[in-house]
Length: 321
Image 1 (cartoon, rainbow, N blue to C red):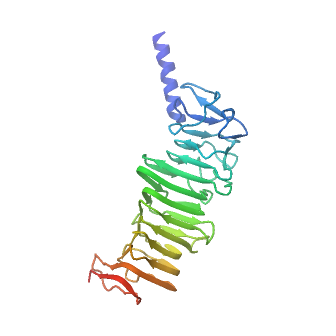
Image 2 (image 1 turned 180 degrees about the vertical axis):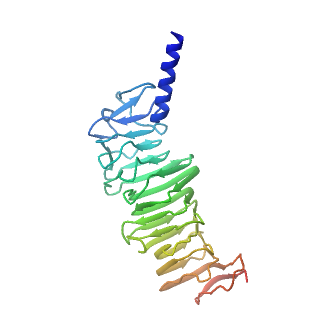
Image 3 (image 1 turned 120 degrees about the vertical axis):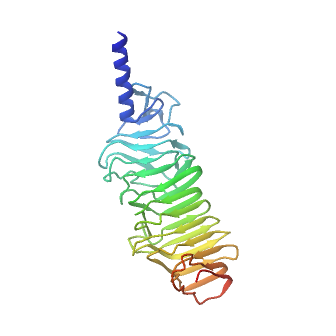
């Protein structure tokens, strides 16, 4: 009897590990439902999925599993979960963000494959936030992965953008560390797309074809660095395309010497409190230049001549050769 019980227990443990769920996790139950409604959920009791009871909806420590054929509507500003998992191929499993509501994810976004369209609809004022102190990432991201309005606001750990395409309208780093993996392609839905670095430290990997673009590969978007730090690096000939780069409130932008291409067209501004450090041979300029802050031309590798933009500087630093 003891042997039989041990085998059953082992089978349950293995099944749990393979499926990924642990006690207290949630699974969508119906064809459609609201995040705030316990009737929309099953909860895992350690051995089976059972209907959630009144008051039981996902917590920050609970992972959520979106099943095939299920649509869950984020209808509150306090919707939270740990990992958000899409459990099957195709487009019939969805999270809809209703107007002015917020989903905060404390773990990772795990798509089954690139065919998923995880967030097909964002209402006005809706937002996704990645938060907490764990390392976070996105699996199986593709051009179908439209985060629309997203904020990275971390107290610890790091958030890694995948080495594939991720789409957005407004992408904000509010706090914490963000890394773009080699080959990362952050692509706006239009040329009105905006990247904000309002705090924290954003680093594009120095290897691979890293890109930030507007409505299509090569199109422009806007970059605002407000009190945060951003380091750009790419080996791609497409690279980073911005209509405007605006560095303010003590923000810092580092342009590494291995950037294959960066484009600014309308405005390049460094306010009196902010800093631009460039190791590029030819630093991009724009139709309107405002270098009231500190601009350092620093070719740390000493690899040849750097071209100095002809404009008015608040503080000009020259280094390297």
